[in-house]
Length: 125
Image (tube, rainbow, N blue to C red):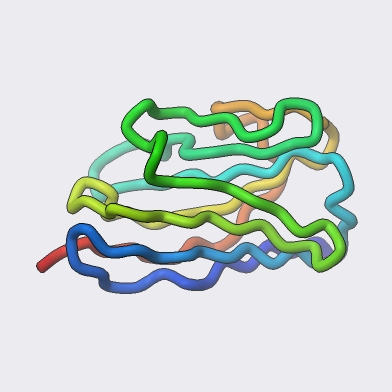
């Protein structure tokens, strides 16, 4: 059974860092695209970053460049989101999502086939 499980969320002060992890089971990541999305209260879910062998790392918001990075370890079936210089506006539930039939990234939620349950990130002093 395919599962994505996020971890690493929490409460952090502005300017701090967090590293989110996404463990994928029941599926071999190989070259498939996997992304991070986030959803703040009262807002739609939005793309953060995606990674694939075809596209490399794809950012879906300019405000994240230089602060967030994505990486993957196919040998461990893990994907990571390193978040630095966090701001209160980064507060959201963060989800990892897998495109099970595509090697290409997308910023559209409907093009992802599998989702984790999410992990809460709160940036506040």
